[in-house]
Length: 237
Length: 237
DNA sequence: GCAAAACCTTGATTTCGATCAAGGCGACTC
DNA sequence: GAGTCGCCTTGATCGAAATCAAGGTTTTGC
Image (cartoon, rainbow over all chains, first blue to last red; front, top):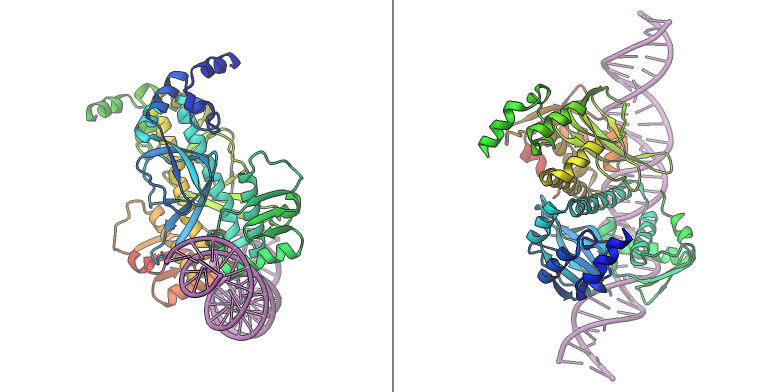
């Protein structure tokens, strides 16, 4: 196993060597030859905050940044249905029943592959198919986690849960108890959209968390959590 | 293609011949030999309404009935995160991050297969893996559909959306405009749980829909929709 | 540097759905 | 048939968050 990995290391394309997403994402399932073929067909992009990501039949490793997934409602409003944090995988086979848009919340770096190529490799390499399936199921679990929020949680619990989710995703190696600081990549309007609240309520609840000493806020977007545990206690689940 | 299907027909196990789920579910991806092997290892169950389905490492075709998926909250309450209607597939590889329970809402008939066997076949047969992936993504789409409901919809829109969802799933060959009747397989409490409302509000909104002529209610559980379109107009999306 | 725009906060009032309360079926038991 | 239990409906009241309103702060553009 270790030997096999070392053998791979020797041949991996230079572009992949420093890629954070390589082991965890799709690429970890591929052998050196496949990785080379994929790297050949891949392209790196930078997308700046606020831009919609084109989804022209590609999968992409999200190398850095944060992306929101939204669905348009008939009344012109949009519902946020999920987020992607680096180093996540974007894209999926098959069409969604209702179209979902992806938009960069921060500046974003992507490594994209043609879907057809990946899908073909998935036929040759069961491990790759398994990873795609695992990935879809993880997203399903995340979505279901948020289904509890709607009706059962108070506004303040929703905001606390949201902060916790962002903290955990932005700081993947979440050092346990200690305090965590991060830049909120969303506007109040985005948060409100996601949580099914209004901007005003989100703002009020953040203020309350600040007054209660659970978080500190510098410059609107810079958040520091006093402690993970303290916030967990406010999540209501 | 047609020839291949005919060849399969000749050899399919007797038990599978009349199975409604065969083409649509997993089994449609298998050749006759695999189907025979699977049928060999499969077992049929009946589960009566109100019973929890054991999920001891199996996939199951849901041949008839309705199943609810729930997640336990720390406060003892439960959140309904989804439903399965015949002829659906139950079960998944990998553990969910947080456990999900499945409970029969009506009497239910299942055809179950050991997970290990299916997972092994998925390695041999890319088409099977593809179907599992498609299935997971469909469930993800469904879950995301309901994420819009929480914050953005009024109680009455939620109830209308819910009725529509049940109608569409219970009557798979949804004849378009005409009126549809069905037995609601859920108690008011279940509906309330799913929609994040209270029993009283669900009851009130059903009464309102009845008074407005959008639905008729006989015996609490027997629902008739005047027309799909009329209900769609009340869904708010 | 100034003006405009975007984003955020806080306060006052209103509203929708929760909560509290009472009573009506229908099914089952004894 | 009377009594109990589970499920549902309807009414009255209350409260959390929406809405309405005003003003503050940060960013952007010229």
